[in-house]
Structure formats: C-alpha cells, structure tokens
Amino acid sequence: MDSKRITALRAIMKREGIDYYYIPTADFHESEYVVEYFKSRKFITGFTGSAGVAVIGQEEAWLWTDGRYFIQAAAQIEGSGFGLMKMGQEGVPTVMQYLGEKLQEGQCIGFDARVVNTNDAKEFAKIAAKKHGSLKTDKDLLDEVWTDRPALVHQPADVLKDEFNGEATASKLARVREQMEKEEAQYHIISTLDDIAWILNVRGNDIPHVPVVLSFLVIGKEDAMWFVEENALSDAVKEMAAECGITIRPYEDVYAYAATIPEHSTVLLDKRKVNYRITNALSETVHIVSKANPSQLMKAIKNEIELENTRKAHLLDGIAVTKFMYWLKKNVGKIPMDEVSVSDYLQSLREQMEGYRDISFDTIAGYNANAAMMHYKAEPDTAAKLEPQGMLLVDSGGHYDTGTTDITRTFVLGPISDIQKKHFTMVVKSNLNLANVKFLYGCNGISLDVICREPIWKENLDYQCGTGHGVGYLLNVHEGPNSFRWQYRPGFDNPFEAGMITTDEPGIYLQDQYGIRTENELICVKGEKNQYGQFMGFENITYVPIDLDGIDKQYLNAEDVKQLNDYHKMVYEKISPYMTSEENEWLKEYTRAI
Image (cartoon, rainbow, N blue to C red; front, side):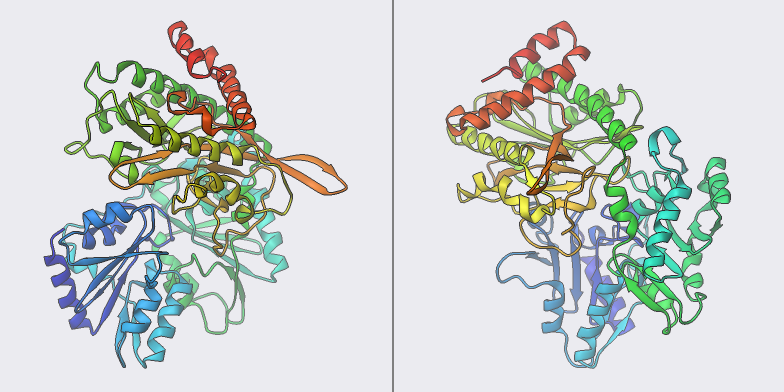
C-alpha cells in the first residue's frame, strides 16, 4: 500500500478541519461484503480482509480487525503507516475507547454518514460532545484521494419463482405490517439488502456472490416505497411491485424521502443497520422504534419449501465436493496443482450441477501454513504448490436455484505428524458434539457453543471466532440472528427455532504451521416433547466425507466413533448413486466404519 495515500488524506482532513477520520468496511446498507466502490478501508490500508475499520489521525493511523484476520492483516499493513489493533484481545481498546482517549478539546471526528450506522454515529457524537468537539459527516473524503475509484454498478434483478420461495411477497408484507402494528409504527425503513430481497422475493447480483439488489425499502401501512435502480429490474419485478402496491423510486432519493416523513410519525427501523444520513434526515419529532427488522427472524426460520429445496442444494453440492475430494487425493503429486488451480477445479465441478448460479463466497484454499489464516485468499502469483504431504483446507460454497451452501473440509494430502492427527481428530470430535446435541427449547448459540468448543479448550487451544453462523436461502451465506458463539453479542441471543440453518465449524489454527476446520450445516428440528418441555436437535445436511486419513481413533470415545460412522453411512447413501463405479470404490473406503 502506498503511504502517499495517507499523506493525501491527511491534507484533506486538515483542510476540512477534521482531526480523526473513520473508515469502516461498509456500504450504505451495513453489508458484510461490499463491491469495489465501497472498499475504502482496503484502499487506504492495503488490508484485503472482509472485516475491519481504520482510524486516521494527523500523527498516527490504526486498523482494527478480528481474530480471523490477525495474521493476514499484520502481513498486509507492514510498512503502510498503519498499526494493528487486535479486536477482543486484552488491553486493546475499541475504536470508541481509542477516540475517547485521543480526541482533544474542541477537535473534530469525520466520517461519511452514509456508511456509518446510526448507533455508531451517536457514539461518535457523544465522544465529540464530551470534548466540546464536533462531527463532520457530509463528505466522503476518499473521493478526492481515490482518483480511479470503480463506478457503482447496478446488476439485473429478477423475481424468485414461487416454487423456490415458499411464500408470496404479499404475504410477507402482511406479516411485516402485523409487527409494525404491534409497535404502532406507520413506517418501517429497511436498508439491509438480504431483508429486502427476502421480503420482495427478488434476487440480483449487486454484490459479488451475494444475490441482492442495492436498494432501500420503506413500508407504510397500506403501500411501500422501493428506492432502487429501475433500469436494472426485469418486467416481472416491476409487475410484482405494482401488484403489491410498491412504488419504485430512484436509489438516491431515499434521503430526500426520509425528510418528508410526517412529523410525529412513529418509524420502525434498526439503528444498528440504517445509516446515519437517513435517520439524521428525519424530523426531530419523529419517534424511532429501534429494533431488529421483523423480517430478520422470519427469513431465518425457513419454510418447508425452503428446507426441502436446501436439502436438494446440499445434495448437488455434496456431489461436487465429493468428486473434488476423489480427484484431489488421487492426483496430488501426479499433476501440477496449486491453491488457485484446485479452487478453479472445484468451481468447475459445481458449475456442472443443475441449477447452479454462482459460488456463495470467494473460495478459501489454504495449504499447510496458509490455512492458519482463517480467511486466507490465494493469488495466482503467490499460490502455494500442493505436494503429497501435509493438509489443504478448503472453505467453499455455492448458490443454486434451490439454496445456498457453505462447507469446509481439511484434506490430508500425505504424511502428517501425530500432533496434526490429534488436532484433526479434536476438530472432528468438536463438530460431531454439536451436530448430535439434544437441548430444551430456549437455548441459544451461547448456551450451545461450549459443547462444540470443549474438546479444543481441553487442549488449551481456541479458534478465536464464532463456531457457526446462520445461512440464507439463496441469499447471504452469513445471516443472523442464529449463531454459535460463547461470548454475548447484541442481536444474536434469539433461541434456536425449528427451521433455522446454522453452520457447525470448529477449527484449530497454529500460526506459521497449519489450520484445520470441519464445517457442516445443520437444520434445527423439533424432538420429543414431554413433561420437561420441547426438546430440540439438529439435522445434518452436508453430505461430504470427513477425511479419515486425519483421524487418530485413540482420541475418540465409543459415542464419537458411532456418530462419525453414522454420518459417513448417510453420506454414502446420499452420494453414491451419483458417482462412477471407480469413484464409488474410493467412496466406500472413505466412508467406511472405523
């Protein structure tokens, strides 16, 4: 990264009277992944990971990121003028704590109000007020520095057909309005793209590998306003909007419209998601009810059509990944391979599957030490060459007409050490623990995370991230509110409901050595109901062998062995009808009872 960019930004900050400038990894919608136009933090720091924020002062500059990216970030920002703040580590301040300490009397904090959510903006305002300072939020200062910034492009959007969505748009709007009525809200402002896509049964491609449409939706008691690039919409989408009483308006008009919402109205919105420019445009007399969008929980609980379709998607995906595993283990050391070429080959297998649309995120293929970086991205010029030794971690997924998948397998390519086998087995044991748990209704991810993490904690190890996340239905590969994590996080404490789909992905990552992860997807299902309450469990819907070459049976008890054997029996029954005779001989060996 060229440190001249910081110098240029500091000159603009000085001209604008800004002492500290905040740059998040965000678009106007608080999306997890963003298009190149919004990658300001990447531009200014050189760090390419999907999560992180930067703060630039006149004397120092810092990058904050989480445990998935500590290794990667440290390498990418070296010599850039940025220091690394390792989020969640002892003694490391949050962005707010840092600014609260550093901001001097009368100084100014700056940011683009369109890429900062309302709650964060209010915290910045409090920090500035304590020092009798100010905020400046009306400009994106990067526009002047980033002279070759990519354009913001709106891709074509179409309706998700009835056989795939399971519920009509009109029904979803009615359910949302029922929740608005409970809050006595006349308006509901939605900026999160997956919520909008789900409510409207529309899919696009405005973010790579995320089938959403850049837009804002304002739902009234009888009608709705959809702020979107109309030229990108198919005729079917426009017809749906007309039938449902939805007026289509230009994407940028949302800010002007917010200012016209009548005084003393009650507006339901999520301040953690809706950007500050929108809420700042509302009349001061408007009463804001800040809660999670009702659609967040609605879409997390998949209907029967969505669940059945998702099982079909996982079967297709399982066929592709199992064929990949066969090819990889048969050919490593015999033909040239590197991290990029094997990723491309896996994608080519997915592309052969019925109803394939896209990968669901950039494939992570990390060989040996590279796999210790949880979200490592191989590049053609530097990709590691694969040899018949060590381990390859591949985290990948696909979008199909029938749903979205996310799977990680760690493949043993040849000899590995006893400690590597122990760690591989501990990860598998952890994965099986969670997949086979029974629990009473009311448990959430905090209640259940330790069941997965405990075998790894016993080794005084940890993977410094959540154990699992919700998965969207032909939508975001990461969605809430369901997740597995041991630390409390606002908005992720809902109890597990039947129909939620969540990943189960423990791991062990040793810097400069290796990384191991096993990831399956689980549907939450109801079990027995008796005098103690409603028992719940999980249905495993990922159908790919776990590499038995990494298993050391001495670290598994009898129940672990049964669970692994039962899983592999299911995999063979699901996948074998789609394999060649040669592939099936191999599959029998890799799904054998141990």
